[in-house]
Amino acid sequence: MTNDPYFVPGDCQELGSYVFTEESIIAFARQFDPQRFHVDAEAAKDSVFGSLCASGWQTAATWMKLNIAAGAREAQKAKAEGRVLPEFGPSPGIRNLRWFKPVYAGDEIFYSRTVRGTRPLNSRPGWSVLELTSEARNESGELVMSFDSAALVRLPEAEQADI
Image (cartoon, rainbow, N blue to C red; front, side, top):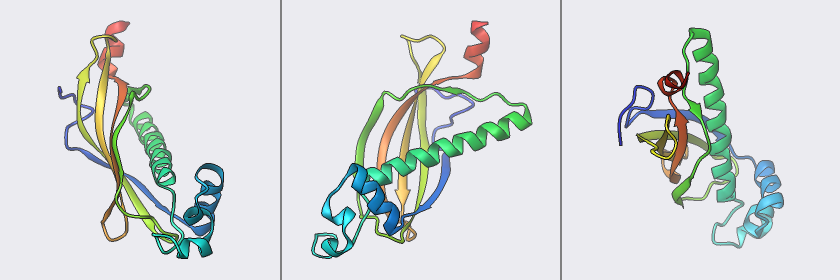
């Protein structure tokens, strides 16, 4: 991994938080993960969770929503300051996705991502792979989800070299 001025290993960005409501849990689960402990509060009482809880996929999808919103805020700030930000491309995937604790109705979950580093892509000159570790924690600071991911990024210097 190489260092660059935009993505410093160890830098952690707080992405925001989300309060999981019974309504949002059920709506998401009905469409994408209709298991009884996600769609039926009464049936969930007799499950291993003991109460209605969010789908892990909803927890992960909420990370993506907050990640995109944080990027949009940073882009607005950079534009106002006259700075150019790296261009984000697609992600080649995630690894080590884990759900550690259930997320129940009423829980507020706090999301973050931490830079592990970047490395240039030989197959795509001007582009690098950004490696991240992302986490979601509950109000008590307990880890409820984590995963490692990568994203293609084009650093502004690379864009200028192509002109």
